[in-house]
Length: 434
Image (cartoon, rainbow, N blue to C red; front, side):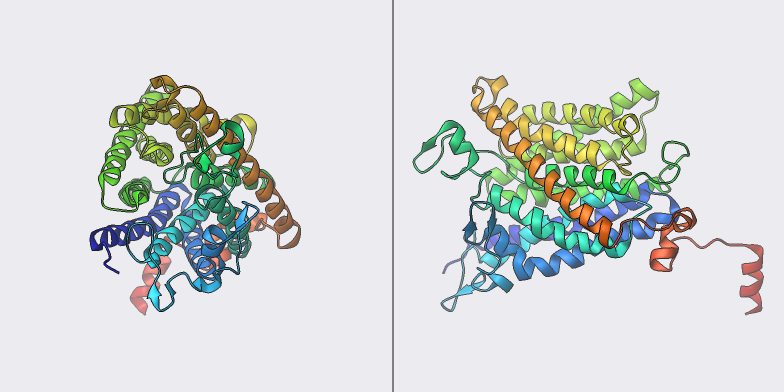
């Protein structure tokens, strides 16, 4: 077959960019926690890479894109171990952009990895690393892979003739008349991870001293570096979801930049009015909120409506991160306020601002209704399944480290390491004598 090498090169680059996002997330989250927890926080992201990378090859791709079981998940044995995925009848299997399907596998595994890693931000300072690793594998299997299948694999939340959208507004030419739009993962990635983070924060409980003592970020330059790496990698996330080096990829790139810039400014303005300061943490968080919001909409908006979507996301998430103090759930690093809120807004925002389909642009209400239904369905599915998984792990392995370990620092108790060695006069003398 005569492959499109330009598309192949772009998609391999996009997969690499998205993979970079998870180490970037490690810096982002690592800088936001206290110094005694930074290694554990970063290890949770790296642990997600290891666990999900293995199971995706074994059954993750098959559960996401294999033959459908009731529109809920793909048959895990259909392409177990990528059997028949890469080569069939002695020839490479074609992918979505006239390149080998191996490239699609490479691209999709990075989405699964970052989605699981995002959840860890709600669990800082207090979670057993072994329980987290087990959760990562189980949650990816029972929640992420089925969600990817339902939305992107032709399942119940897709535009297929047997999907939920088709049941609402009917079928045209074998597909839903009004198909859901989730360009790069508003439901699959951000709503999914945000809901899971909220459920686990409620199951695991608050950190010792939550709401009573300061738990400030220990390294804001780490946070800024992490946000920069996330932004850079996100171009693979969004523009790569065009599955080719084409005009849609270019539009997604521009829309991603526009929404992110506007969201950062929206967050900073909210901070300035509310608190009197525009902070570096706010700038970094606003960047992520904008990236999250434009993810489902990157190919459906234009640059001007992307600015609107972004600024609203920045304001909404800046206001939402304070809800944890009002309602008492300890979402340590604001996964709920950023990913759930902006992911939900971006998903329904397509129905308001999407070109030719948006309610506010004269497109009628039908796309908005479909987007709302799909977003709510994703919340319910993720919430219920995460609750079951989290509760079982709480009663078996246990989620919490001991109180003394939490006070002393999770890095030492879970990993036997510390990020920063304390220099004392005694240690200096010992080094000189040695």
